[in-house]
Length: 162
Image (cartoon, rainbow, N blue to C red; front, side):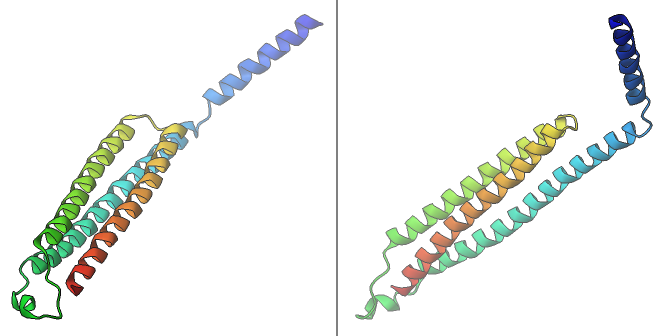
């Protein structure tokens, strides 16, 4: 009896294996998964490029404001109501902006490297999860960088009011 059950189980297991191997849709499903994961990576790369362009525009705008402050006419220095703008204040803003640019460039390089690593991995659930984690991490980093840029912009507004 046990031998019969064992033989039946072996036959069932063999049939299940053959059925799984003979699934005509398996290659299609695998290709669909690969296509979907490649599309996710392409969207991530495109999103990163768009964000990089926006960051460059913001940095350029901030740099112009710093340059305007640096080249502010000396007429304000003769006005007793106005407090004079110290060059060290403008230099500090420039350093903050440079630091932010360097940080953004480092983050871009790290993200490019991670995307390349993900592309080398075979399509899998793990790769999909890593791509989603990278996307979330990108969003968090962008918010942090946006906050730093907003802080620099606020400092510039306060300096212009001096």
